[in-house]
Picture 1 (cartoon, helix red, strand yellow):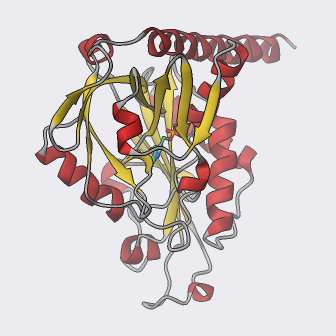
Picture 2 (picture 1 turned 180 degrees about the vertical axis):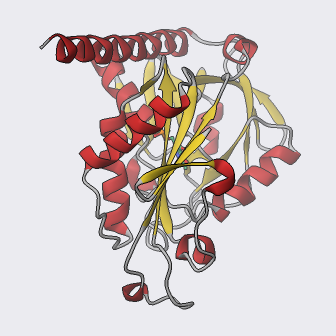
Length: 301
Ligand SMILES: Cc1ncc(COP(=O)(O)O)c(C=O)c1O
């Protein structure tokens, strides 16, 4: 697979960055994970808006426009010709002297790495997965703003280590006040008496692209929504729980470990989750069809 690095494509063995890149030294950078379906980068425009916002939060002046990055994505996809993949779009602070003074880092590094994916097994979507409430708490928003999708992922890595030890698919982090925030790499939703609830952004979580799309889909389908503070007790009283991210779409959770395992609802994938799974899949199909139609129109001009 070819890797985009600072303006050109390279073989993996030749794509090298400096050991003095502050991304390597300090995890000083931001990134996006973009799902590629039928060769199309899904919701790329939304990811590029969030990337820009992440850069703003960490005071990194992005020297590339969204159009320039989208063109780099296109070139990477054309070179690799992979229909189903995940793109990692990463901007790091770039090389500079050792130390926290970012003013000395003049040239950010842009890397685009594509990897083929086959997706989670269909049985996960049919039967649901296990999620574990972990002890590691989500970074406090005033310590590390969660709206920046930072390459500094140790908080999530420690939480994932805990959830792996419990044999769970995903670990769920609480904030310092004990409210549910999100998974290590996913947002979380629950269904309570037909109403869709999800932790509000104020709880300290990444504003997921999938989360936002799903909230819009739910709203247009007439499902009542509430973004709120949620305790573990409230999660346990929910009839349905599911996770979202760009790679897993909508993943039902049918057991919650707290750490004792508890069945969610009746232990089966619920009707609201199923409806939203279908709507989200349709949304992805529509997106791919619209991009294809747009390209055809451009070619015929
Ligand atoms: C901490 C965290 N929350 C939520 C998400 C889901 O975001 P998205 O739907 O944009 O993939 C991710 C994605 O990786 C994440 O890392």
